[in-house]
Image (tube, rainbow, N blue to C red; front, top):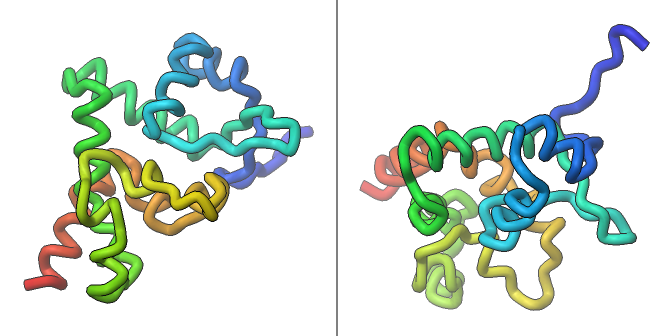
Length: 148
């Protein structure tokens, strides 16, 4: 069993195992999910599973809450600054139809059109790359330079 390598994106931890690893309660994880701070993988039977990347993302969320004293709504606003329309290269017509562009206040993955599944947002490059703490500022900087 030694030397087993597990992909960081492989959903392997149950919600109770993730809560134990993070030293938080299962209801807290469910609250973060409900507030669109992250998207867990869900099996066909709707069981939530977490990857090492999910755990890292939640550690980041916990740091924002506990150390920087940013509330859940503040985190959602930070996530809303991720310029997904620029990263994905949306044209002006696409941007005008996009709730994440026109409304803001929460992450783009919280504006799922009815024909999307959360797994599609979970696998989106914007969610995967730019929703971690250190990446938000990087995304805004990159887009600001490109737009100038």
